[in-house]
Amino acid sequence: MQWKIPLSDLDFGPEEQAAVNAVLQSKWLTMGGVTEQFEQAFAAYVGARHAIAVTNATAGLHLACVAAGLAPGDEAILPSLTFVATANAVRYMGATPVFADIHSADDLNVSVRAIEKLITPRTRAILVVHYGGYACDMPSIIDLARERGLKIIEDAAHAVGSDLGGVHLGTWGDIGVYSFFSNKNMTTGEGGMVVTNDEAYAQRLRLLRSHGMTSLTWDRHKGHAWSYDVVDLGYNYRIDEIRAALGKVQLEKLPANNERRRHLTQVYRDVLFELSPQVHLPFARHAGTSAAHLLPALLPSGTNRPAFMEAMKAQGIQTSIHYPPIHTFTAYSTGAKYSLPITEEVAAREVTLPLYPTMPDEDVWKVVEAVAQALISV
Ligand SMILES: *Cc1c(COP(=O)(O)O)cnc(C)c1O
Image (cartoon, rainbow, N blue to C red; front, side):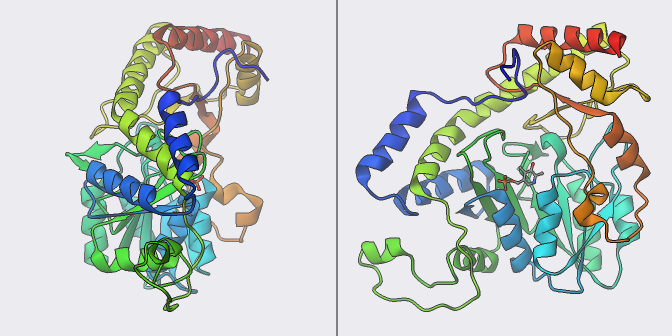
């Protein structure tokens, strides 16, 4: 399908090509010096003491759950309105995901009140997701977690460059995880980053990323080590130098690109208000500065969403849904009963509209005109 306006697009140029070529010419492809530079630059940018690059955010979430000590019989509370990887990471540990409802049609993030009601003696962790890059209520979540002795893992896959009160999302909780998948705000193709301010977590995460081994091939190459011990049950969740090189360049472009996303989001708000005020845009006047990863729109109740999306497609415009709630998936039909009325109501009306930094302002007008047209036709 050749879209006139795709859902998302990359901002890649000669800088990315040069960075990748330099790695290829160096003939050192597995995790080494470029990855260290990427980790340092990333840690400095988000203001975290430690940043550990990984092969993707799903692997990062898994490592975060290992470090947080999730075990069979434990429960972890998280939203159902997220990508399935957030819940899968909990299940990799043999632990049980418990789904909490979101706040409202204005705030699609998990509700602190809903989390509180679901805490049991088995609860060990809360996994928050900053939907679209918009901040969860971290001060309240941290108060609750402290009071009840729970760990906080932040799925910050949408939130690279978002902050709340000047503190980057992903650095509020115990461990934060970012994604560099192709449609995220910065990309390495596949890739992710785990951040923490805790020295002990950082050490363990580094070990777990590479088989639980006490030295890397890179250390041995540099002559810093000639053997190793295996001190933990680890994984191979390493990134590589090609992707780290892409990440360094993408990170440099991120602040300007996020600014552009915020600008386009405001244009959407203004134009939709003018042409299709019956379409609701969540997160108006939301606290913090968002990375504006997504442009979620809520169609009027009762709209035939598949027909709407078909009508958009017929006009060459790609749309998507964020998300089919996890508790509705076959692999999650465990018989557990969830009361998630707001998640279900909102998820049924949600359509994600195109948003990416290289999108011209006039394309927002085109999308919104197509929305108005599609709403008449369905
Ligand atoms: C993309 C995404 C992930 C998974 O990221 P990968 O890097 O593709 O593994 C996890 N959680 C959320 C909310 C995401 O959007």
